[in-house]
Image 1 (tube, rainbow, N blue to C red):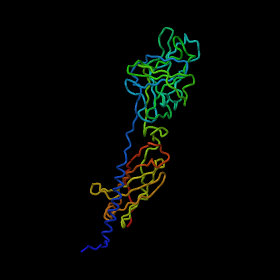
Image 2: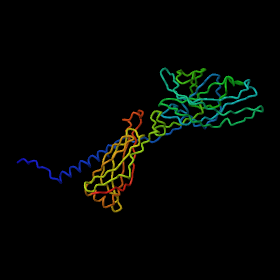
Image 3: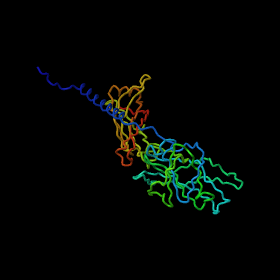
Image 4: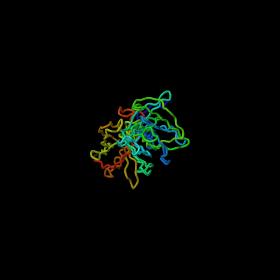
Length: 371
């Protein structure tokens, strides 16, 4: 005979409800674990290693720019989008005032620029740094030098962003008025003879400004620009630059000690939480509750949470009566872990490509117990 459906008794209803709650927490934990992890912060030194001597001079009367497409067989294009945070240049400008007609002090200014390849072998100047200055090495009348032609100088551009595949150039503003001897412009000694290396060169009066587009004048073989750039990506780059999110590091869910309660009668535990307004898309994840029982950490339960940016919310965790009674016996002292992540895909402030960040926040709470 067919078995009749029987109504579930109170015990079985409670068991099923408990199972549903545990399944919900387990699914939240699995979803969190499935999120892609944020890649390791990458800060890369690119370009010249600055070990070779500055023994070549470029001297041009008009604005001129230089960038390596290859150094020692290594491509010079940016391997990722991000922010150029530091530029180091080995070399100087050579000056010989005894033979120069212009008696005004040499002004060895240059910029670094982000170049983007476009069609037809041409390049577009996307961004330029503020003006920087190379050191001056003076050739005295007796032939001795005042200054070090091999010194390395460091410069910090502001918000100089690059995309993957871009190049960073050295752009001097010419120097016809400071020419001397065999040089057609201000002599910049910041280059080295290097096999397996290629250097693009372009010059035009007022032709290297932002937005200018041009094909290089020449590809020079065996010449290295002694310039090293530091490329910061992800959490080390400003959010103005591709893939950067330095200003929006996920801080995790904040839990308040005050206002945390436990109703031992119905097993309801409540924790007041806050999500910092700078977190992309809010704080999502699971709240896990445990307690120290006989010197061992014992899991008591958990619940999923979602708190919007700059919002405060009370997260409710439903414990079994046995676990609630145990927690009451322990004086309401619980360790609570907010295992969470942000949600940049649903925040208009986040630029495309910003990854999901995860963080665990652990706090010991003394609950106000009733029931």
